Amino acid sequence: TGTEQRGASTYYVSTPIYYVNDAPHLGHAYTTVAGDVLTRWHRQRGEKVWYLTGTDEHGQKIMRTAEANGVTPQEWCDKLVEEAWKPLWEHLEIANDDFIRTTQKRHTDRVQEFVQDLYDKGEIYQGGYEGPYCVGCEEYKTPGELLDGEGEFAGQKLCPIHKKPVEMLKEENYFFKLSEYGPRLLEHYENNPDFIQPESARNEVVNFVRQGLQDLSISRSTFDWGVPVPWDDKHVIYVWIDALLNYATAVGYGSDQAKFESTWPASVHLVGKDILRFHAVIWPAMLMANGLPLPGKIAANGWLMVGGEKMSKSNLTGIKPQDLTSHFGVDAYRWYFLRAIAFGQDGSFSWEDFSARYTSELANDFGNLASRVAAMVGKYFGGTLPEATAHGDAEQAVADGLAKAVAEADARIGDELDFAGGIAAVFDFIKQVNGYLTEQEPWKVAKDTSPEGQARLATILYTAAEALRGTAVLLAPVMPATCEKLWASLGAEAHLGPLADQRVQSAGTWGALPAGATVTKGEILFPRLEEPAKG
Ligand code: ME8
Image 1 (cartoon, rainbow, N blue to C red):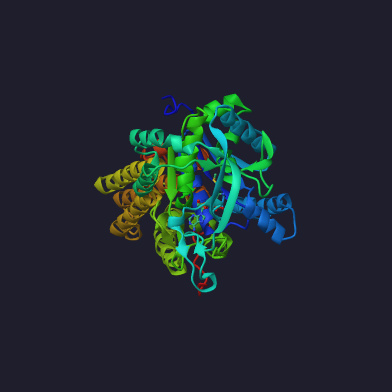
Image 2 (spheres, helix red, strand yellow; image 1 turned 120 degrees about the horizontal axis):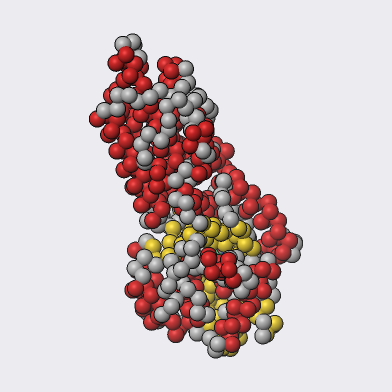
């Protein structure tokens, strides 16, 4: 059909663009860190990558928040973007290539053109609609999915996600003929089994579409904080239509054809499962309607939960990432959520679990290994990495372990978005190296001053250092600053160049770190946590 061809030469990943009604919490950071690790991984494969994030600034939710704070919506958005959202992504070492805001002219002009095109093609018509609306979701709800309110909300119907009363909304609006796209969408899901990930999300969407789609109201006339409908300025474009188009407008749709063609379509749209239908149903239908290629994958992450409910800004249950990074550090933070929660599943944050994993896996297994090896190369070889002249079976097992970790992590993280599985493979390897040192006992071998004894000692320490070289490359996308410190402590840059230039494909090639490298005992990678932990 043409829409299924993916030709772009760029590995293009997007996060949702977040509502700026409040500051970001752990949930937003979860999706954004996942995308950062994924794109860093692909950059490390040597691919051309584009990583996009941004903010969703129109609609009633933002307008009401601004009103409640006594400022204009634009002032509110500017303040939140500059003081809360951008600084957090910098703090978390997010290497996004662009940051789109839906109030930017480069976006609003293109949104109008896109919608005008659909109108000209007869995909949009005028009609009326009345139904229960959740401002938290910015979405009409179907009566069947609403919950009965209790207590302060007795007698009212509640949104199943926000647990707040819905409002009855009646409008004369413009409608997109979404109902006509069911068969083509189902065909696309069928022909592209990986289009929606994970499987549970795919099934949910397929079932939803099979029940039949309704046309979608794409304009609002009861408030004006939005992009005007080009042919009828009494209406603004529905915030979700406006928002979804960011993925195209940010990479040159309608403005920079060369860039658009080399970037579009997205390889992966990362989304929370709360907004799956918008991305897996409405968005592809909009693209089909305008003849644009569909994205490669919609990957839904689960929810971080608080007290059994989705952590949310609207319900004031958000925990600020900075509350955790100030205690655990940024890299441990980036690592923890991807390591501890299977991507696609819900998960609960717990201070105890984070502390326990930090201490056992980061400080003890990984950090201690790095500092022990550097200390022994310092003590026994004056800080110059010795040659492995006695490489035998035990060493070969470590070399094979590295190759296996590389292959496993590359497939899991780079292709399957199984971050937990990929990180676990690297930490299994770290355990293997620790086991190797425990068995070889270099501190005892050091007492044997014969040439054979010294050759053994040299070989053991070379092997451990080379294992760390591979580990630094594999963990760099997850813990960039920590791996830079390790790279520096191994003296790797002088021989192999910057860590950022290392390739996944050659990370498992044994013997890359040459004898003669200057190994120094650098900073402690994971300092002991201060006790007692908050929580
Ligand atoms: O939905 N657990 O913006 P939003 C995991 N503007 N992820 C969570 C989470 C949680 N508890 N809470 C939020 C919007 N997220 C729209 C998107 S896209 C064209 C428009 C993450 O500020 C998750 O990725 O409500 C979720 O989809 C997103 O933040 C919602 O952010």
